Length: 247
Image 1 (cartoon, helix red, strand yellow):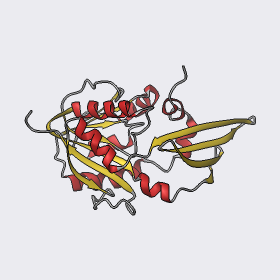
Image 2 (image 1 turned 135 degrees about the vertical axis):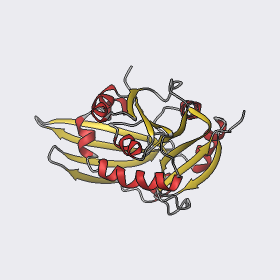
Image 3 (image 1 turned 180 degrees about the horizontal axis):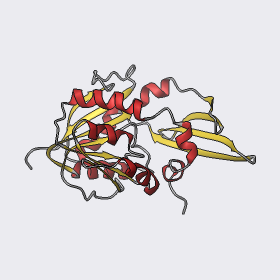
């Protein structure tokens, strides 16, 4: 049985090469803005779900949050552990399974680290598990792409040149998903191809997952300054949902 695309592509050096601009400097800018606008408090507990190599978790910890970064990839967690310190921990974990974590004030799922699964039962389970990691009154912050805007402005093909490779990237919409195919040539003329497949969820669909997990959707925003979400214009779709304080 082959592994899901995100378990193979994310672990290659080429993924990190292609997206090398998504670095700590970029993360610091939008996470600091997000935390300021959310009103996080020093000492609160935060989980960065699907933390990758830990760039967002580092900034969350720098905001005074007791931060736990969780990711499916042992390789990414091994890399992230070099940044661990008191107040910042990393752990291998899967959002498709219940999370064995301390009850959190905040669960962050950032930069479209969702929408990858084969069916909506799996997506609903992931939201339920993130909700289950919250303490009563805690909040889930889901930072997703604005699929409507991306679909309207989809670039069918372009290329990116780095020192490591030249990548040809094609994009299409198929089965309610936005699919990106990345092709490139390894040294030695070995042609490789990877695919990113992300469900083009609407705000209404994501809200339904939240409500199904027992969360109350508080706000929808279109960027990290927490400006209003405008389906035709916003770059992001950021949903803030809260776990009830009492059963």
